[in-house]
Length: 292
Image 1 (cartoon, helix red, strand yellow):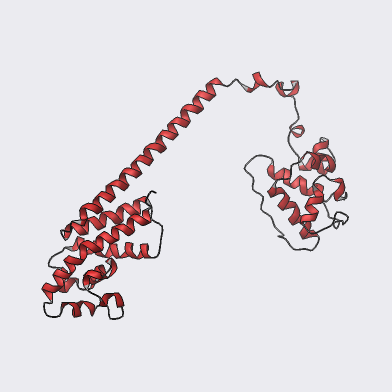
Image 2: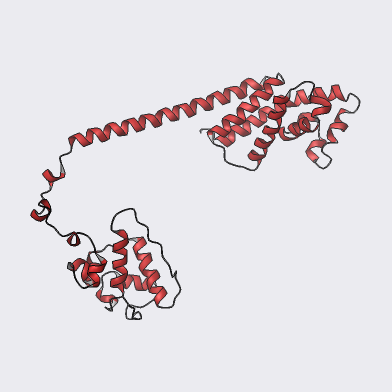
C-alpha cells in the first residue's frame, strides 16, 4: 500500500529523533558535565517523558531543548539557519501530532528541513530522509506527467471526434419555420408571462399537460414540497434560491409552482399526489387559494 504524506512526515520525525538524540546528548554532556541530565530536564519540569534518558526523548522534546538551551549549548555549534530549522520543525511536529493534512509541498518542505538539520549535526539518518524526499518528488513529477498526458489525450479525442461528426442539420431535419427563421421563441421555450395570460402551447399552459410532461427531479420535488408545507402552515423556508446549470431551469421551476396552485385536485396532476404525501398532506386536501 502506498505511503501517505502524513505517514511520510511521521517516519521522518522518527528518523529525526534517531539522528538528533546522540548529538543533543553529546553537546549537553559537554556543556554541563556534572549534571547534564538534571540541567536538561529542568527545561521541562512538568513533562514526564523528559524525565527519561535523552535517548528515549521524542523529536519534539529534543527540538524544544535545542530551542530553549540554544544560547547556553548549541549556538557555538550551529548557526542561525539551523535555529530557524529547529523552530520550523517544532511547527511541523505539532501539525503532525494534531493529525493535520499534508499536501505534497508541505511534506516536501518538512522532509527537506529534517534532512538539512540532520546534515548539520552530521547524522547518517540525513541520507535516508533525503531519499524519502527525492522519492516523493519523483511521485509528484510522475503524477504531473500523467495529468499532462490525460489532458493531451483528451484534446486529441475531442479533435478526432469533432472531425468525424456530421453537422446536426445533416442528421436531424429541422422544421421549415425553424430552418427559415420564422418560428416564435415562445413556441420552443417556456414563457411565464404568456402562461399567466392563458396563452402558449398546452404543455406549458395546461397544468395537467405540464405535469404529465415534466419529470420531477429531486431538487424540483423539494421545491414543490417546501411550497406546499409553507402554504399549509407546516413550516419550510419562506425564501428559496433557485440555481440551475442549464437554460430554462428556473423558469420551469416557477411554472411548476404556478400550476401547483392552479386550484386543481392533486389527483388530477401527475406526480403531485406524491408531493402532497411528502409534505404531510393527503391527496384530498386542498391548498389555500393564492394570488398569481
